[in-house]
Length: 312
Image (cartoon, rainbow, N blue to C red; front, side, top):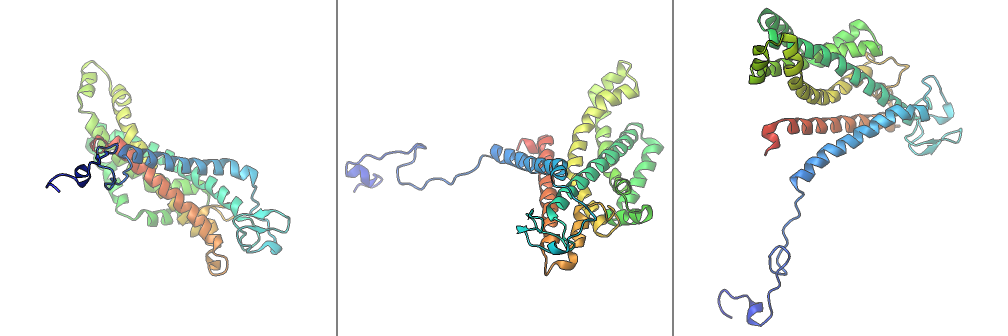
């Protein structure tokens, strides 16, 4: 056999190349998912899960109604998949007073999403307005507001939320106010930084040179530049806000006991972890899956909005 000549060629058998130009029988390269496809999956899978939560939160309580004062001794602590005394199927089991766990989780999804959306709307509006005002005007206004934000950010947000909730009391409105107070500095910081970077750009200077007033420059130059980063921050903060609401409800400082939420349901099952694990575990899994999907979606939106990361 001659050196450098494949054995099949010496024996007269032609070498059959494969589709990628490699000889037949050689090891195939590993299958690699294209980066573009991975990024699409990172975007659409979390969106699909979040959409399912929205549908469950909006339509679910209308289909499977939840009565917070209903009790059924015969249906206490039934495991998932059990039949209840009225013939219904407890798909996720029942709690310590015989209430179906599935309607509680769906009603809790509605409350958590409502609190999260209202908190982000209030905190985002106030924080963005203060951030744009500080970034555009500067001076004493900027120094005063930003020092207040620094002082607030120096405290752990959950401890500050517990303190404010303890002062205001338990209600949905107070939870929204509490979480808004602890969240607005993040939006203010982002809006201020983006305003500082935008107000000295060429198009903003050109608008002022042509006689545009401050409100015109803010509305047509600053706001479009601030909207994208604030949307990304709102997506990331949604998971933290919902976890904070569940934590306050777990401590009986958030949603009132008569209104089901994920935190309240988890708190109801903490004494039954050994005998009825599903009461606390299943709402905790629902909360964890939602927060993870929101975090992945926020990271993907951040990467797509960053030109340095999107070109890699």
